[in-house]
Length: 291
Image (tube, rainbow, N blue to C red):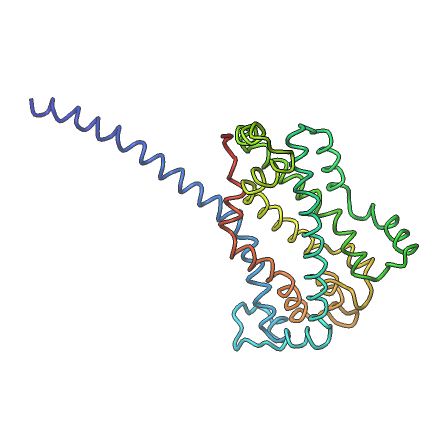
């Protein structure tokens, strides 16, 4: 009787342990995938940071020296004193900030209209505009800006960056508005609300996570754009990605200043993403299941 009673008990314990084991295996597989995907980017960033904190002798040493001994900020000082990085940093903030704000003013209502009218073909056109290589816009935009006298100005850069920011905001907001429950808008419509009332007081407050995600993505893509800033900007209106290119010299490739300039470009968007990562995750996951 003892052995007969113990056998079912062991079977029950094994049956209970299987779900826990499967969850542990899934969790381990998930974190392993995260490490495999993220580790190359982290290692590249750490190596770039190491180059920016070492002198040129250590940067050219073999075998490579990973940990600076001692670390130095000479490369950052050189970048800011010899290349006007402060001015280029301000230009990037102005261009990316203005392009993002204008994209929000245009893209949020456009995304709402596309979502409610089910205008998916129009969405495809917007995505085609986003996927078209930036080089395709350079010649016509350069010609137009030359005619208007806007070449080498921040205004021209803001206008060109709208090609990047507006499609992103429209795409994110259209997808987010489609997941919002229509019952709330229908109730407001029965109470006598207009189309503007539905958008302003019902849909817009519920779309806050989507607006945050669209804002961050538009700002990051605008901030990282190189082509428009390198071709359409002048010496005093360059943005940071184009300014990094100016650190390269024909006489000698200085890895320390180049890595320092790259860190200056990367750090703002990296810190912004870290500080509001919860908002980004909430915006990407909200509406995953339709209410």
